[in-house]
Image (cartoon, rainbow, N blue to C red; front, side, top):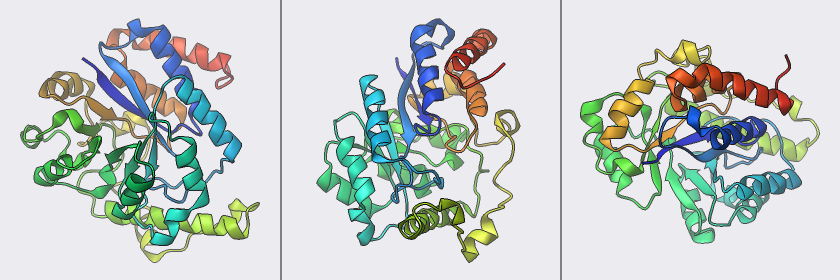
Length: 314
């Protein structure tokens, strides 16, 4: 039985994720039975279709080709977070986003969507891509989640307001296609979350417009938005790292993941962290995927590997 984990950030954290995947392949005895790295999600910035987390850096086309070749050689699917809810018709023809889609169109890579406009465009122009419905849609009822699962999606990421509500989760009709986000940093029932996604989408659009005018001066970008100013310091956005956030009521304990969620039929688990430091993710990965009795040894082995790849110094 496979227990599929979907890991964050194949651009800034590409080396870290590759090293971790190497340990998974070469030292599988550290890992819990059935654990699989099913995909890496993220985007090649500054893709205007991106959503969920603002992406500031810039990748040129050669980098995109090289990165895709590295992951494709390992048969590791990339899932593009094309979840910008604020897209308009004019954005569908974006040259860089379409370049990414054409270059990665090999039947391996996937997309995550929010916008029906973009989803229809992708289905028409890039039919080989598997499509995942994003948690950013804020579908907070089991009835709504089941309706989404009835549609033609490869996976549907549940809103994490439903996490640990086992009476509700038992009613999910297709648990094998339902993905659970297990370590959210936003508290459940946050009133600002949808507006936050909208603002991030607008920010990504405006950043791309800024780069057209000043391609060599990304640091001069300034996002001015009244809604964003009100919510950017939202109290529901918890601070700190993995250990500080473990207490969030929407977070899964490792015991519940393997002793409740998996026996219920859930097979797909998403680890949030596109804006996290790799050390924070290291602890998160070890907690959820590695046997408890092996974590210290696995941590040491991983740190040695990271040092050998120039990612740590000691």
